[in-house]
Amino acid sequence: MIKFHSPLYALLFIPLLIFFLRVVIFKRSFFPAVRFPFFYPIKNLSRGTSLPFAFYIKIFAIIFVIIALMRPQKVNEFVDVITEGVDIILTIDTSGSMQAMDFKPKNRLEVAKDVIENFINGRKGDRIGLVVFAARAVTLCPLTIDYQILTRFLGEIHTGMLPDGTAIGDALGVSINRIKEGKAKSKVIILITDGVNNTGEVSPLTAAEIAKESRIKVYTIGVGTNGVAPIYVRDPYTGHKKIAYMKVEIDEKLLKKIAKITGGKYFRATDSEALKKIFKTIDSLEKTKMKVKYYYNYKELFYIPLLISIFLILLGVVIEEIISRRLP
Image (cartoon, rainbow, N blue to C red; front, side):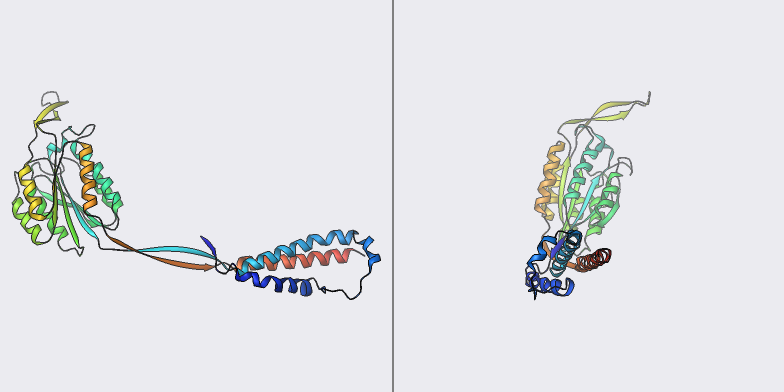
């Protein structure tokens, strides 16, 4: 962005420039000592018709001097964002049941990944991490503000990456360990699952109490339609995939308790649109407060029009000299 530091101040120099250019450069007086009216008929001779070109060059030189006096500057704007920050761990179930196709046209896990990616891209200044779990839980990506790396790890999540099962307590334990030492004022775990805790070393309610002591909120999301859901299975005889139906079992009572203990909320998502609305709700509940400071870096550019002006003045003088030598 180009700005002029002294746009009006330069106007004061215009009379001085006119005087300087007329007396010093053009070497003419404002009031000639003697006038010869009878010389007017010869004013259109070759010398008179050649000099205006040099005169116009000097006019442009004056314009560029005025621009230089206006001090053009290149301005770079820097924004310093001061944020209170929210640390968020996204804890995602990757058990086999997350392949259920009740969130058409994709399965539960793929739809959840799409919604989570939009959620990540909508955050600013927050540290976000990824924990995945099935029969055991692992940290896929620690807390980071590099959302590009985060979404790359998110894209790599798939069912079967861990032994099958649903260890909700272990998943919360790993998530708490990843977030509890952070300095953010708000700490949040978003737990996404479609099953019932059936394995693991840590009790889910014990993990919830630990989260409460560490001032960590847990938002729990149960994904899946009520009743039964279609799922692709491989036929043991033909090896081909076929559709089977599985009973949807979500321990809503447990998920509600975890949310209540930690001060979070429980949500039920029965389709992709419901899941999107849930993440929008969480996004609004856990907004980051930001203060913005602006800094400006100025680079002076006055020397550019000044150099152009000097060049034009010299060019005009040279043209006048050449013309004056050629003419008798």
